[in-house]
Image (cartoon, rainbow, N blue to C red; front, side, top):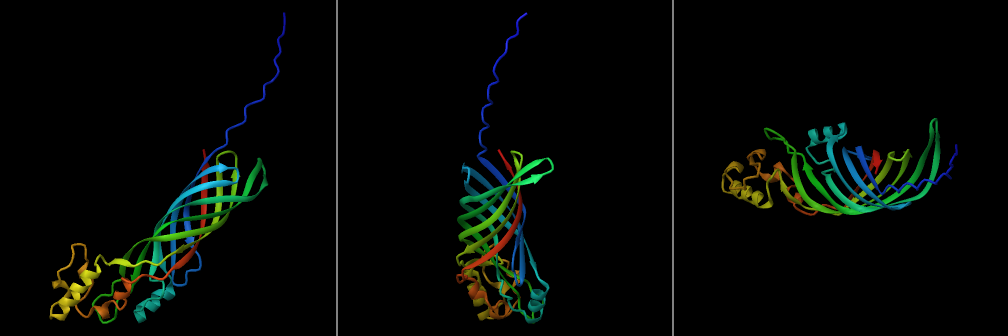
Length: 255
């Protein structure tokens, strides 16, 4: 009998994983004085190099909670507490760089640690909000939609990856947005506001004004619009540039 032996062939190196899908179920605004924004975000990274990746991200700050001090001020004084705008959805494209990395010893192996720095530009949608006025039967919150504005984002973070597919991320980001103007308040445009003012000037009511179909005229009580919404005119003027930092905790999968 003869025995044939073969030299072991080295295994082919595994192809690098180019794509990484990141989901952040909790993105929390930091440093909000009067209001707190909380939302979710997702991103797709294309790793073009071991330390460089192209990014495409989107997010939505879907919850806005007013802090107790803000609620008390607005209820008693019926004035804006300063945070009369809030970010909603965003879409950004940019670059992520990993300037440093290391390893973390685990019970069943090692995890890869990476310090990342990112930057991105794109569009951010905003909303305008202002309280009503005293002396009315109701005091609704007035909400205005603002067209998407230019946004720039910078961030730093830490990625912990174990195995080939899964990682956890903690990222601190700051988004800068240019000013924007409201296109409507409670669905009513500037032209609708003029129509309600003309109706009031001629002895009528806001309900008798000829407004567009989407205008929630019922939210404006009969009276002087300047008393109902003192910042009505300001709502249709460009908002000042602003920024908001957020902390995101995310999980990612590579493929």
